Image (cartoon, rainbow over all chains, first blue to last red):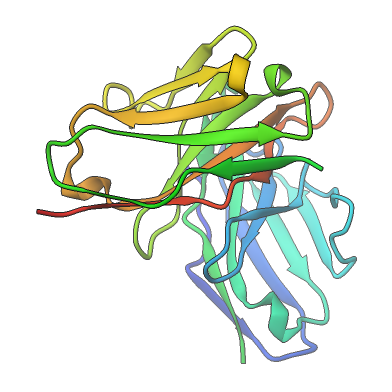
Length: 108
Length: 122
């Protein structure tokens, strides 16, 4: 299957580390990308090519990849990080864009 | 500065036609794909399709093929998403996004428009 699966929600206290996973059979062959969508705003790219951060994205955001699972890690979570996070990749043939269902990060 | 500016919110009745737009600036419009992404109320992101303004090549998600029409006019740096007959289930926010296709980093959405709210109700 070319679907991507994320947990619906993750909750952490300020200062702790949040980990959001994304799993999919095509991930060993296709790069993963992560987007942050704050309430009422458009999505924004925060990780590309599994592990790379675009300019201007804080170092507390990092990405990793292992087989069929990619992980977004947010170290030292802040209240401003409360948002929905989406994993995106391509299908196994590289022809179509695929989004996972998204994870709501709640900062307690 | 790269910018994608979308048209204003729309309120339509079922059966009406609709076209929304996305104007790009701050980059060479013709060499980047523009994508459309749907977000239904309280739901996640869904990729609808892509248009390459340089030659108007279009790719649709299988889920949206035949449901909408995507196009672009490179002379005015604008991409479009249109419906011939909207339904209540088309109520959503629609985002356009620049889709960067790279040789070494894959393909991803690097800039997004602000979104266009479409509401369909009788």
